[in-house]
Image (cartoon, rainbow, N blue to C red; front, side, top):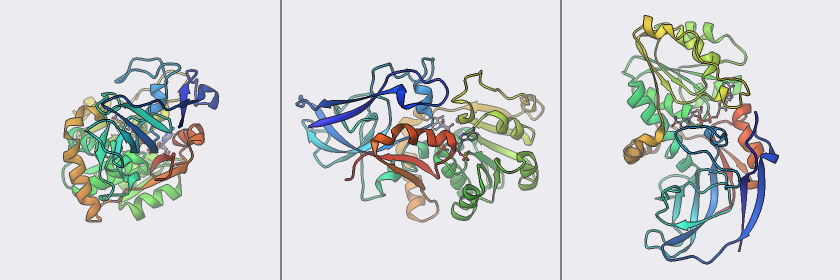
Length: 338
Ligand SMILES: NC(=O)c1ccc[n+]([C@@H]2O[C@H](COP(=O)([O-])OP(=O)(O)OC[C@H]3O[C@@H](n4cnc5c(N)ncnc54)[C@H](OP(=O)(O)O)[C@@H]3O)[C@@H](O)[C@H]2O)c1
């Protein structure tokens, strides 16, 4: 049996290119005791993948040249010499950009765990019930600490993390205002996801939008994009506001230094705080978040929106959709049918 991989061949400068990867195929070897073979069904495409390609110190070691590109994914066990997983089990973990993953069932970097497909559609396990949902839940509740009646603003509102941040904040009784690119995304955020308002930063004035839609100021800003939008929101925060630094996608393909906020003294004036978060710090409590989010999903109180692109050969253009704003909801690459 053959398996196909995308291996990092060069460190991208600016946007990722096809030539930054080498495509390889290998014959799948025999399993050793304790190992499993997982057929990749879906891969999670995440903005962080762009950062993992850089040779820079971060919260996780960079992908090395020649290594299979790191990616979260979901697959089905097709061979097993481990008591941990049986053939037919669905598992999620660090499968990498490849058609099959082979390794020890308890491999720490892959961190495979079993998922239950009867509880939710498979893509949902990479979205609301997966890493983006965990990020939204813990970032909002633990770092943002919103209270009922407060105003929560979230950028990247139509994306994976943003959609759940806004919907959870609504469940907590907050006024929720999204920021997203384009009318169609803003319409989805308000009409389908139930946000109170959404500011189209590509076709409108964010400052004026915040003034109009956040008449009582901003108590929590969940920042997915950084750059100019963060700077503008800083001018509208309330006393003791909390800014969650989840990501800064506007800066990830920069060939110039990251643009930091020039309005940071607003933190001083308002006795506010800005705090970074990394989802992996909450790994031991993922089941708590999954149970809460799963309950809201089952009750129809929140939705999980995914944008599925087919074919591993489309990995590079699909990944770039994140930076071109082309994804509606969580971007997922479908590698194989069931
Ligand atoms: N800290 C953590 O543990 C953690 C975990 C997961 C994700 N994150 C971060 O969370 C953020 C969102 O990730 P996601 O997976 O949910 O992605 P996503 O929002 O589903 O997709 C990315 C979206 O970012 C927006 N975008 C792209 N370029 C932009 C720019 N120059 N300015 C403003 N917006 C831009 C686009 O939406 P528009 O069309 O609306 O522009 C795009 O659709 C990222 O920064 C990511 O790195 C952090």
